[in-house]
Image (tube, rainbow, N blue to C red):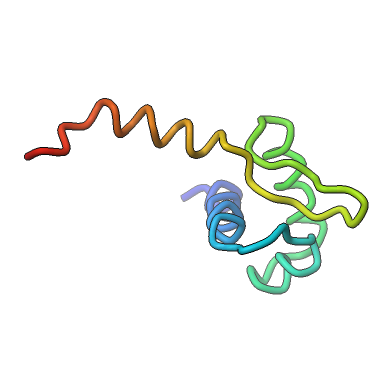
Length: 81
């Protein structure tokens, strides 16, 4: 099992369930990861368009990219089974 990938998925889930943008320290505490690990994951997700950084407090939130991917999956599914 790819531990880094699992950490990234847990981070995405935490952001998806958040009511507001989250900071590195807050996410690290919730996920029981180091701040440097969370920062690296967020940087990677930001580079690929999954999260964006909200200035001036350096908090992060999801972009619509996850929603767009979900819509592609839903369009391919036969939901009337």
